[in-house]
Image (tube, rainbow, N blue to C red; front, side):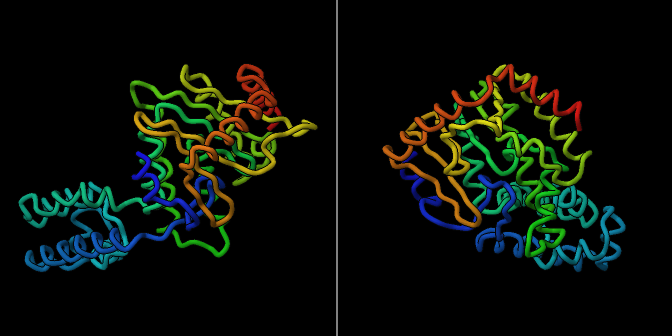
Length: 293
């Protein structure tokens, strides 16, 4: 596990899960996969004597969407490949690309973090700017990406929303990992995306907070002693191998495997949890905030 994590992003790089509002570029390997799949779609379409508009109409997509897939600019969904395979008579040749496309669907930094989370038997996260990505609703996530500056195009926004939502499969795993989150009070009061988006987010926190393997705590703003002023981070305990941590600020992301640094963050997280409201107090606090929203 140490060598695998160390090969990921130990050091700086573009990412975004600590601040949870960054975007990612599609890495070169993923781009090559999408271009290759796009060429195959085009070849089978031309062999069948259909235009892009005709293929789109037959499978329920627009001409521009088909064109984007063929140019490798859009990630085709499994349904697209299944439908195109059937309509173009590809005999399973296009549908066979679904697994390759699924791996390429998510930007590299997201795949790295998702792999760490998927392997974790325990996770602890402290967030001081926005709600942690594993806890976000789709509307909240989309609002975060829409307010990015410079502005992101719609395809990038949807790609990143899809990637973040996919990480939440961690809640459906069995055996269930032990998950702990501490959120700053301000992250639950700031109406990012509007009041209705915030209401939906608070409702989601109350829902997740009822899970037996999840504890959500709130750090009140009025605390005069606070161990988390250094910023957001998360701790991950894999099934095998040493523990790791992930810290991030702005466009700098770092996966930490150094035992001393991870131990320091573990100690800090323990103090943060002790300074925050208890899980039961926190759910009551969130419920009260929901009533005020």
